[in-house]
Amino acid sequence: MSHTNQTWVTEFLLLGLSDDPQTQVLLFVLFIGVYLVTALGNLLIIILVLVDSHLHIPTYFFLCNFSLADFCSSTNIVPQALVHMLSKRKVLSFMDWAAQLFLYLFFGATQCALLAVMSYDRYMAICDPMHYSLIMTRKVCGYLALGCWVSGVLISLVDTTFTLCLPYQGDNRIAHFFCKAPLLLALASGDTHRSQMAIFLMGVVILLTPVSLILVSYGCIIETVIRMKMTSGMLKAFSTCGSHLLVVILFYGSAIMTYMTPRSSKEQGKLVSVLYAVVNPMLNPLIYSLRNKDVKRALRNVANRAPTWR
Figure 1 (spheres, rainbow, N blue to C red):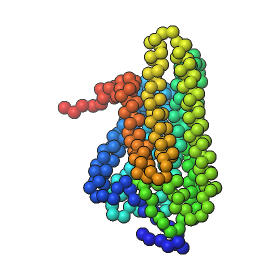
Figure 2: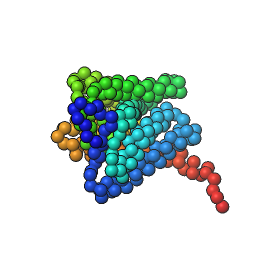
Figure 3: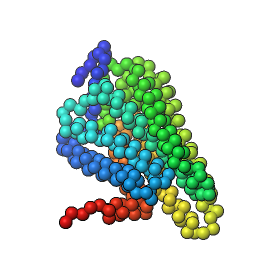
Figure 4: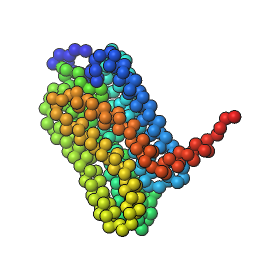
């Protein structure tokens, strides 16, 4: 679709990951496989946490919320990308683009907050076990989870609003497979300074604040573990944090690479975005299920209770 400088953009053309038909078919197969594993893995964790009473503790309550955000984030991006891989016109209407951008930011910001809350939960369990059950009550956990989702809504509203308020005229081509605010700002016809500053400040709030809390929490955890005299106690403490810490590294590592990739390296940026938006949601449930004895035990219990047909 072509536009003149005087024509307002009503839809955006996504160029995708490749324009080669054979490559697109291969990507379609890979993406649909990854998405199925992502959906099954995250939904399985959510179901296990809901049905197994042994998992009705703060740690798995927050994990259930994180898996829900993972599943929704992947569903917001991958199905649309799959449709475009088999379509000649890879277009999104202005409203579809706005909805995808809002949901992408919403689930991403919520995950950032949830990772910080999960690290605080580990801090309380290891550094102050005597008061853990008194502080991390169901009510407190509910408020913390609600705060994470609300913060995601607020961050997303601000970023989306400042992006939407800009005029878009002329070029409507986006060299990517889903909508991201920086790519859209590059297409804006007006002055983007205010929008860039607002998005930057929101990024500082939702990225640096959780990272700071995570670093402080794990700093205290490491100090507490070092003071433990029993090796078994040290190993148990580290094992309870291992899965969460690995997810944190994958999530923030890919997020940092996504938003700190040089503008000239578009292909590298696409690959990092695939890792961040497509692969990570698949890896998270695998990490928690393969490294967690409680989750594996819950899975065996559910499998044993399942009816068998004879």
